Structures are given as structure tokens and as C-alpha cells.
Amino acid sequence: MCYLLFARTTLPLVQKEWRKETTEVCAAPLNESEYPVAGNFAPGIVQVISSTSGCGCYFPFVEHQRGAWRWDDDLDDETIANEQINREGLARLLQTSEEDFVELYGCWIDKVREPIQDREQVTLNDIVQSSFRFRELVLYRVSMRSTATTGE
Image 1 (cartoon, rainbow, N blue to C red):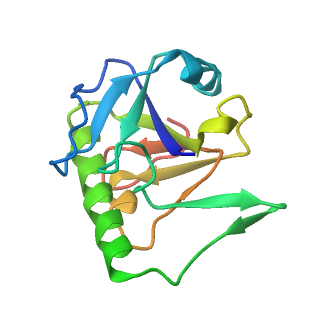
Image 2 (cartoon, rainbow, N blue to C red):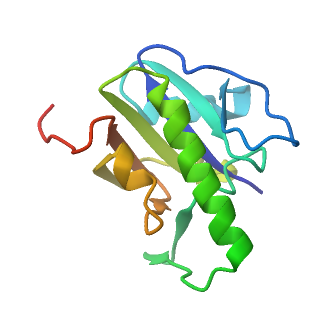
């Protein structure tokens, strides 16, 4: 089972087919089984974002289990390196949008019908920090500027 990361923009992100031999983060249209997740976003274009694993599993995330966030601080060097490559790749992809804000939402593939559990505003700079993790079922409003501005 895979973790998926979705992005909502006003114009499509640059789409590329995922290839195993690269370290690119890619955007693609939703497939039929992913359509229900679009209801968690404001109107716009919702795409699925693939990490270097081909799904969202190499993006840093924490799961919501039994009413709590399961946070694993005991990561091996390879996982830490993969997460950083994918944070930076995601930032590069989002920067191509030329938008002020992008919405991101992550969940396991079997949870695409579940509603948002929380909302959070972050900056693109926050996402590339080694301490950042996407919380499952949380809608992120990502400011493409260095600091998030509330109320926009």
C-alpha cells in the first residue's frame, strides 16, 4: 500500500512520467481511484505527486493511528537522504507553478475518501527543512514566499 501526496493549483504543474532511474519528483493527473480526494481541495487542478519511489512513500510523513501521530525519529541514513532529496525535488516542482499558494494533502491510498483532519499553513522553506513531516490527512496551504501570510 502506498502513501500519496496530492497538490492543488490553479494551472497544472509540469507533468512528467515517473522513471526509476531519475531522482525527479513528478506530477501526474489523478487516476479514477484517486478522484475522491479532489473533494478535500478548493476548486482548481488536483494532481498526484510522485516521489523518487514512484508513489509518495519517500516524502517525509507521519501517520495518524489510534488518535495520535506516529512519529519515527529513529531513521537510517538512507531514509534521511531519500527524504531530503524528495523535499528538495518537491520544492523545485512547486516553484514551477508560479503561484502564490499551493495546497498539498497526503494520505494512504485506501484513505482518499476520508475528510481533512486538520489544516496548516507552511512556507516552501518549511518543507525543505529536515524536521518537516507531512501529517497524514492534513491539508497544507504552502506559501511560495519565504514566510506564510495568514488571511490570504
